[in-house]
Image: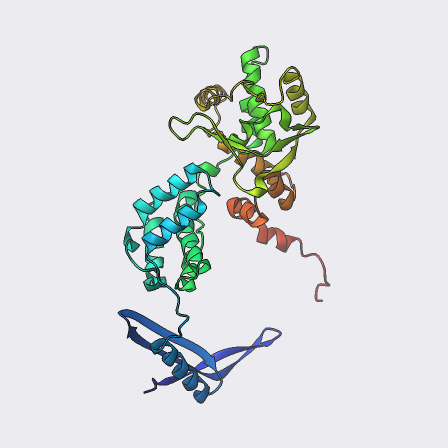
Amino acid sequence: MRMPVYEYQAIVKLGDGKTKKEKRYRYEYRKMVDGVKYKRRKQGFISRDEAANAEYLDKQNLQNPTTNKKEVISLDDLFSAFVDNQRTKLKPTTIKDYEFIFGKYFDLFKNRYIHTFTPKELNKWKNSIIKQGFSERHTNKLITLMNKLIQYADKKGYEVNLKLLDELEPVRLNLIPKERISWSMDEVEQFFGSFDLEDPRESTYYWYFKILLDSTMRPNEFRCLQKKDIMGESLRVNKTCSNKIKGKGLIIQPPKTPHSVRNVLMPKDDMDYIKSLTAAYNDDDFIFGKDNVFAETTLRRELDKHIELSGVRHISAYNFRHTSITLLIKNGVPLNIVSKRAGHSSISITMNHYWHLFNGDDERALNGIKWGKKPN
């Protein structure tokens, strides 16, 4: 028995901004198959018969699936397979982060087959994450993991509704998250003005923080730079370091993404200081620290000390990177150049992170319309 076909008025675009209403047809129905509730709806058919035939074929396919029916998998098994696949591609700390996130925030879908997930459920889950008041970065980390799992399921040929991905777009919260706060030019000058350059120890940390800011590097890319990474007037970024895994000491590994491998052209005074400092170093010696990198606790202590002395806002070492990118954009450096210097994999990532700098661009565009004759 065929389900009813519905008539509706569709808005058809004619071009030049013109539209007209035309009669179109759709079908929709709900059905339980193997304990799973399916909802089918499709519209845009020119005739009633066309919609009815399409509905009939769809229903037949649902009741008598082909022999190529995809396998089903639970979210728990999918996550295990995904993590096993990613172990050789991601840092151990990232894997541990994924396992923590999955264990704490994915309870709603535990022991569920992914082909039973609905967009409505995903939307409800996403909104519950947003309501917890996390930073934009952390909120999107949770949403992105679910997005990756759905895409991985599809890639491996498991049955999954790809419309779920529409509910898993990254969010843009109204407030700038604290981890993306940057200093103004005045604050930069105040901070560096608090160092006594006659004191050798203070001078060392002055140059450390100045070159970190100028480099636009991630702190853990910068900490493990070695003499062999000096390439003329540039610094070569091809590794990152971390102390986050207990009992492992300093871990040096490839950078965040292939796009993170780059040569960063540096100001002349920075390179003059680095070349003078490392003149007697071996190639494998660290630029700052020589035999070992500077300890994060020491850097934090020196940073806090000069923040207090200068009276600027409290930020972390990572905010030096955000300050550098922000000031480059504000100083008119093209976004594609900023993105490449920062080691982002695409301009869209730079744009997503620094959208707040472009508020008011519509007004700027409007002010730029200066062509055409005014009517009499």
